[in-house]
Image (cartoon, rainbow, N blue to C red):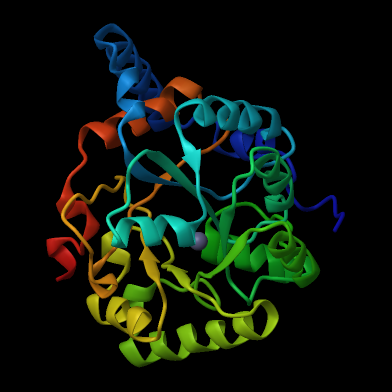
Length: 297
Ligand SMILES: [Zn+2]
């Protein structure tokens, strides 16, 4: 879809956020932390056997080159595996190497560009989508959805034909709720209705759906009854956007207790900053990270 009122470069997103003092401070702190890793030789931590889930929202055309460079870099120390394989390995205690499993949230149209790059590296990605935004063409509706649900300028979304193409390339499709509401602000019955509605549409269009990513991603945006409902409905996994990666080493896990963590990346970030988050995750590996945090139990 071509429309000049929709944002289609990351430069435009950055312009909208320019002058943000927090991001300047954040960048300087990450520069220092990256330097510390270099001095201490911490890069070797990237070779630690573990499962690292990484996700992005967008790969705009001006981010594509950096994304490819990131994939090239990460492929040196990691094996890229699908969400389904990652969940299987975690639950069955088969984490013998450093693995990365990719996903993306919100169904932004430039996921097609991301897939192009991922395909070059044989990396299967799980695209978590909201049926309410797939195929939207009305610019006013897009503006409202992006502002109210995604807190970003208006962008084009995938259509169902593109979703089918992603699947035909070996990527998985996941449930990200029907219309991107914050789960913790819904009653349990509202959540169940929304979840089942999204599941019904996605199953009809894409076949069986096995993975759920709740919206906004922090623990306080989700609830324990919602978690139980997702797993009770036969899903294989439920994933947050809280940083951290996974190790097992203690035998098989009961899948209805496993709660996944992911690290967000923006392809435009400095490689050393992304590397910092990966090293930190590897250094802080903890069996307890496989389960619901105390705040949700
Ligand atoms: Zn989202």
